[in-house]
Structure formats: C-alpha cells, structure tokens
Length: 128
Image 1 (tube, rainbow, N blue to C red):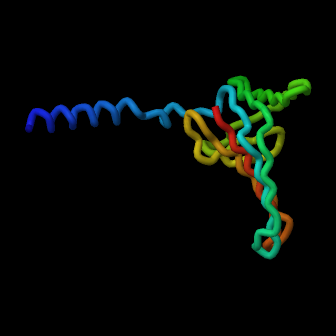
Image 2: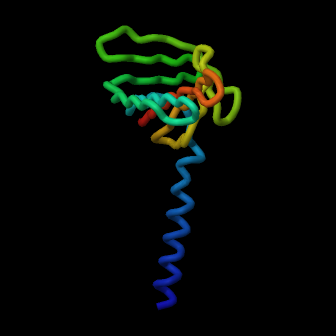
Image 3: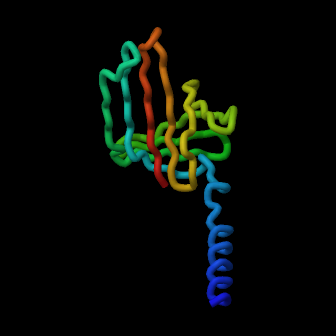
C-alpha cells in the first residue's frame, strides 16, 4: 500500500515538473485569428458588441520585429511591432495588452477612450 502511494506521488511530481508549458510562452511564431470582438460603451454601459470569426487570417510574429498578416485571397501585409513591457505589444503605433499568453493562445486587447464613460474595446483572440 505504501509502495503504491509513493509511486503515485512520484508520478504526480514528475508530471507536474514536465507540464510547465507557460514558461516557454512567447508571441513569436505563427498564430491563427480565432475571432475578433469589438465592444462599445457609453456612460460606462455596454451598448454594442460585434464578434467576427477569424476567417483564416494568420499572424506571424518574427524575431526581427516584423509582423506578417495574411488574409485568404489577399497579399500578405507587413507591420512592425515592439514589446516595450512583458504584457504589452505595439503594432504600427497601436498599443495592445497581451492577455492570457500561453504556448497555444493569447488575446490582444486594446481600449480607445473617447471621453468620460465612452470607450471601445477590441480583442483579437489568437490560437496556434
């Protein structure tokens, strides 16, 4: 009985040590747009939400600071990006917050303020 318990604990410890995928999470590489969500607020109340599917759009973040966005049936577009902080990315002047970055998913979040209580949120959900 004790031998079974020890073996079970050993397997659990080994499995938890090997399952540290988030330590290797990076924005670099190829991503597919899962969906794009836009929310509009007025007087701090949600007044409109639009969710669009990814439609095969792909993002490729290269190590040289170049972002290639490909849309099916259109020529690829090239943009530059920087990573000024751990959870921030600036793509061609537009600042996004990196939310929930793992090895397989991330959300790019941006907020534009228009005045007290009036703002718009944009969320691009990416998956590998």
